[in-house]
Length: 209
Image (tube, rainbow, N blue to C red; front, side, top):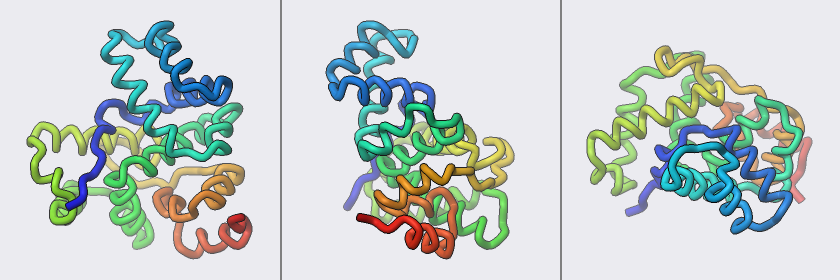
């Protein structure tokens, strides 16, 4: 049995915070230095030390999934690309969110079905219980939070118009970010709701080295 990493409930998208931490790391290449700035100097201006520790731990795990080129791209990136880059780190770390985006949202969009409804999530969750044991052992409260925070992330990254309506919208990625994704692993474009044809075109345009 596999387990999903479900710790994304610690922090929703946190795009601004991710950008700050990424820029500090790119400048210093030293996670201990960044940790000290977040915990001791409170550069993210967060309340308790415990909260800062939890947030830093989660953001570090996310950012460590990115290539050096992707991390460096935070500096000077547009607001939408900062969100997309942060979402990329979440797709890479949290298979649960990646699977939902590719298997449910992307599929619906390709069928011109533009709204996620509760039964979509419930059937997805139930289908994953077989392969991912920890989905069977968490409390109802945690299950509720997983759903709530995931849709909040999709709203913050503009994949849906709102948590309430859940109307799907394809996020806009700059050409530079698309290239960074394709040269790393083009499969992640599917999580950004790109069709196979679009992905194949980008693979031709930006061959992996």
